[in-house]
Amino acid sequence: MTIAITGSASGIGAATAAALSAAGHDIIGIDLRDADVRADLADPASRAAAIEKVTERCGGTLDGAVLCAGVGPHTPDPLRLIDINYHAAVAVLDGLLPVLCKAESPAVVVVSSVASVQVTWAENPLATDPTPADLTAALRPAGDYAGHLAYAWSKNALTVAVRRRAADWGAAGVRLNTVAPGTVDTPLLRAGLDDPRYGDLIRGFTAPIARTAEPAEIASLTTYLLGPQAGYIHGAQFVIDGGVDAATRPTMF
Ligand code: NAI
Image 1 (cartoon, rainbow, N blue to C red):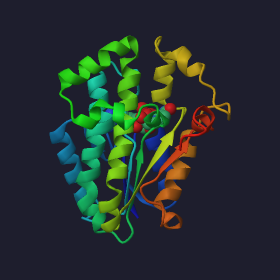
Image 2: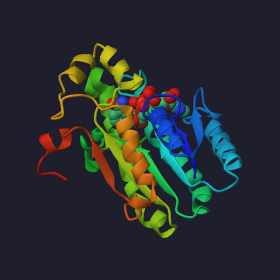
Image 3: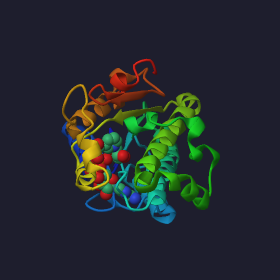
């Protein structure tokens, strides 16, 4: 199978590329650097060129895609965070659909986050396609934690976008699911730990399985979801968080 992976240069994307490559698949890595296709996916022109290059490299037929590219709550500009984690991810998803449709049993995994369930769609301003000024105003009350709020909104909106595609994509024969990790030991998490606003919060957040995940553990779930044994799994979100969601919201699922 030929599989495109965004965010392939680091963390979960790199571990996913390694796992899928070890399983014999051809990988097309897409990232800002150190990738087969170098692109800033938040930039519309760069993103369009990346989709074009992926289309060329896969010969017009793509068997799978894993969307990992993203940034963490510590990112200085929360609006850029929303652009990368939500708008760009959805645009890449839709941009790859034509080549995915040509494959025999295509599947896609989008990396959301357990933060996606920390806010509801009803309270998420991204539900109403806000202007940058609206978003800035909505983030203001969060003060130093605007990045975390923007992150939760972006991942909530990303999971909603995937679920909203389940009907059409299923009819087109393309399986589409999200994984929602808790804390995973990657450069993104380490940057959060080094940030004075977020470091203690993250350290104080202990999962029932009292450790952070290894990127390879997320890659292993993703590998399963892309494969034939997951043939009836579609439109689902898989939390992989050491039990945090169950422990904090046992009655909500
Ligand atoms: P990471 O920082 O190790 O890797 C992210 C990759 O995305 C980097 O290689 C980066 O260059 C790339 N990227 C960022 N912006 C981009 C852009 N505009 N265009 C192209 N590539 C871009 O981070 P990690 O932890 O591997 O994160 C992967 C995904 O997993 C992200 O979507 C993140 O939100 C999500 N996630 C991570 C968690 C964690 O604890 N590490 C927990 C839950 C979700």
